[in-house]
Length: 258
Image (cartoon, rainbow, N blue to C red):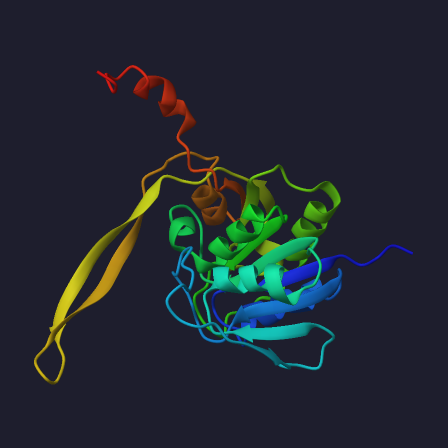
């Protein structure tokens, strides 16, 4: 009898987030699930870690399912580090992060706590996937996401991932019958056109509120943005080696040591 895979589940929206509960439900059909997730929302935390304050972990019971769950006072990356180094007792077979409330396609991967948790697992040599639904609403419907989450997770467990690579999966907010399938993509070239609104609090102190508009600068039909706009689940392999290898030869032509 094959031993069930050990699955580490985390997120950045917090341990009570509906997206996380949907992800747990799927993972319980695949393996032994241990959840280590933030005790409060940690969206857009990127790869932040806690170094100047204490971390607390509490074993909790959110529902009546079989998974073991821990609530952590830290960031998504803290959750993965603590899970691997202190909580699990053995190496997980896979780490899944999400299902995030909102897109993490294109440049959003840089800011995403969901994807940073997956990347941290990848740094530890653990196959990892970040899942996101393109709907920021807390009451978003995750039903259509579940079959795609299961398919991709089972494929990673079967085939593994190249060293240094994790998967960034974004799911369009559509009924299941309208989703055309899963498309392997590259990350679109896009950015945020940002502005800060300046306001004053009741005591007269200035403060700023960040707002912005997402701008897709990429017309390619092989990108995650194109896939999502055309009804596909986008799957982008992401590497945490940030070296711009194509630039090394050019830099070596500079007079750096004269």
